[in-house]
Amino acid sequence: MRLIHDEEVRERLEFSKAIEEIERILEARSKGVFCSPARHYEGNEIGDLAFTIGGDAVEGSYGFRVYPRYRNAGPDSQFTAVYDAASGRLEGLVFGDYLGAARTGAIGGVAIKRMAPEGAETLALLGTGLQAETQLRAACEVSSFKTVKVFSRDAQKCENFCTRMSAWVSPELVPSGSAEEALDGVQVAITATNAKRPVCAGKAFASIAHINAIGPKFHHASELPPDLYGMMDTMVCDSLEQIGDYESPTDLLQAKAFGQLEDLAMVTKLKRPPVERSLFLSVGLAGTEPCIARLLF
Image 1 (cartoon, one colour):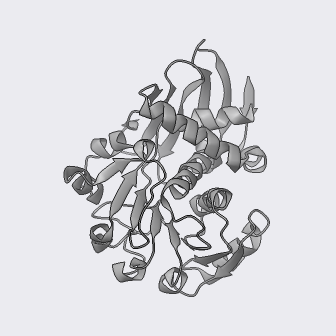
Image 2 (cartoon, rainbow, N blue to C red):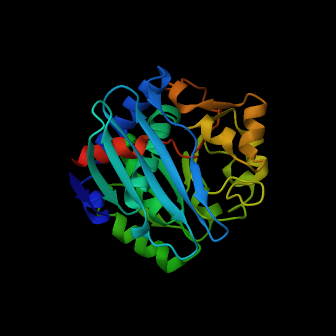
């Protein structure tokens, strides 16, 4: 049985292969042979444990990721268990939070591959945390961006992020002074923040062809402005099951109620007019973590 930790995942995981695996998973999901239920929570008044469970229904990988929702829990508090789907044999454990972020990044990469304009050269990245890192690495695998404009509320953190990530990706990384400056003139945008209030007004996104939204999406806490949803011609998510399980009313549920929200598994490369705008809402596709982890075994 393999035991793998965060830094090994960061160093060894090839995002090109992770993206290929996500595409395989989406194909299996479209055929009904991939299990991906909504998250399961168990806990008490202090906090709880969140489980994302699933995987290949017949062969391949199956398992779960578990992480605590406690105020002081650190990155070493979560792990992913990987089982062989055919035999039930435990193949390994992956410790830390990089794997979960990496599979989210790979899903985001597939969304850009399938939905963003072909030949897009400019990208805005709002956020400089772990999710921003993996989204950027995956995005640069599927599109030949020449310039990435990066914004963080902490200017020094933004500078450091651009310097560090230049070793991982080829586009020029340009720190921006504001979210509006980062979004100005780009074709694709990724919002990967933990902001509970909109990072900027909806009009700042008006000319962008495709957006990947990774951060909070609830009415009471949202990185996106509410009016942005009404500007979109196409809205897609990675798990309708997860959206349907949310206890609190969300903009996502409104989109689903009006039949606006599509499943990424059902979306092929869109041949769209240049004026059309699309939005990918990342909510987490369960069962993907064990499959990505198995690439390291």
